[in-house]
Every structure is written in C-alpha cells, then in structure tokens.
Length: 274
Image (cartoon, rainbow, N blue to C red; front, side):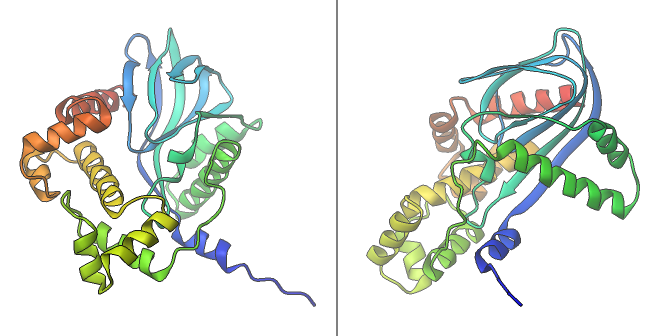
C-alpha cells in the first residue's frame, strides 16, 4: 500500500474561488459588436459557434474562429469587432487566489485553444439546462477549458505558502478596505511592528502594505462601478478617498481614463454583449 497526501494542492483547491459575474448565448451582427480600448477587472471566456470575430491587444491580433475557445485575461487592454456575424457563448469570470488577486492577471497573452468536436454543442445544451447537475457539469467544463487556455501563459505556476502574519494582514486589509491604509494601521491591528510587517510583505508578496491595499481598493472600485449604479462620490467615500476628485485623479493615473469614462465604456460593452 502507498499513500500520498498533498496539502499544498488541497489548499489551492480550497482557496481558488471562481465567480461568473455574467454570461450569455448570443448572436451578434456588425457593426453592433465593436469597441476599442476595453479593460475589464474580470476575464472573458468566449466559445465561438459560428461566424468570425476579431480581437486586438497590445501584443496580439486574433481572428476568432468557430470551434475555438478564447480567454481574454482580466486587466488586458483590447479592441473587438466582427465584420458580419458571430455566435458565441460567453462568460465573465474571476478566479481569485488566496491573496485576493485574479489568477488570470498573470497571463501575458490572450489564451486560445481548439475545442473537441461536439463540445460546444454540449456546452450550449448544459447552459440552456435547468438542473443542478447541468450547473455542476457546466462548472466542471469551464474549469477544464480555463486550465487549457491558461496552461502555457500563467507566470504564477506555484501555489505560494504564506506565513500566518501575511495571511492575517491580507485578510485585515480586504475586510477593512481604505485608500489611506498603510503599514502602521495593519501592524497595530496585528500587534506586530511595522518593520516586521513590511519585511513579510516584501519577502512573500514583493509589495509594500500600501501597494497591496491600493490594489485591493481599486479592484473593489472596479467591481462596484460595473455591478452597481452607486454614485461615484459615494463609492469614493466608502473606499476611503478624501474626495471624489482625488479618487478620479488616482484612477486616471492607474487606468488612463476617469472613473466616469471607464464605467460608460464598460456599460456600453455589456449592452453589446447582450
């Protein structure tokens, strides 16, 4: 008898959280499906049934063909269009690791893979189903295709082992999101020294506490700007910015456009997807 238990992979399975924020089975026509300079806080999985579409990022220009799956990683700046028609299943997906970052953000390129014969028909049938088993099977298939699409592109190949200090600090930051949060507040909450906390973050995450907190704050800002209709001023206040103008300035420095422009662009894309 032999026995092997891998606690690291079990922890990774437990900690990796997939959320599907939107999906659809759509038929599109030119020039309706067209946009430039789109950047999303979630990844887009496109399963092409018929027609031809185009994607263009800073590194790639891709012709989307029937029978193929495409994954546009979270944070990728891209253009999209189709010249005639396009039929596809789509899923907007986040794959959040234990550190709060999206796994797909480590991809350097848009993922592409050919699907097996009959697989897209199977996915369409599952998507149109109404049973728990349909939902479970669809989830399993999505995980499998994501693995294939990300396999040769993800830089972060190993599941990290974070110290208890790092885990507690990251949890505190994500539960108390504030643009003004820094090492002093987190260290005080954890009853450790600021210098010790900074050493842990630099060693285990390669970031300062403030950089990590800012990443989490803006990730939440992007999510709420897309998923809710909350006024930007209210959102800025909730996330700890001194005023909406400072929030807008920091947002523009980070993403190259104002929060209002970003929300408008993403809302237009949602209308085109649906």
